[in-house]
Length: 143
Image (cartoon, rainbow, N blue to C red):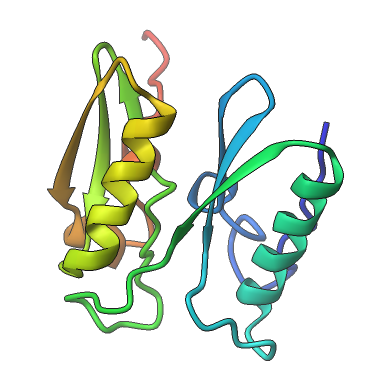
């Protein structure tokens, strides 16, 4: 187990790990990191600390940058390419309207999931509610 300290008291889950880092195979992880880290932003600090912990654990760590530009400007908007959903034959991922980082994310996911088609979608309504594709596709118990 690799522990990520998160951000106490700033978020209902102390940091959505599925918006930060995802295992993609044995010894491989993808992490979503800020383009211009702000050391006064507790989420940026937590992301960089988690990145360092993954490296220290000996994992091969791929980085997907946060988008430089996004359509939604709200401070609470979740702009994470790591919050994707893996299903039969595909990976469903976000696109935020930044052509450069949208392409980097899709290409990186294609390398990590070579046998799956990467499909990107505008997920702005999910991000405005504080989540992403992975958050919205969680399992439901059979009633």
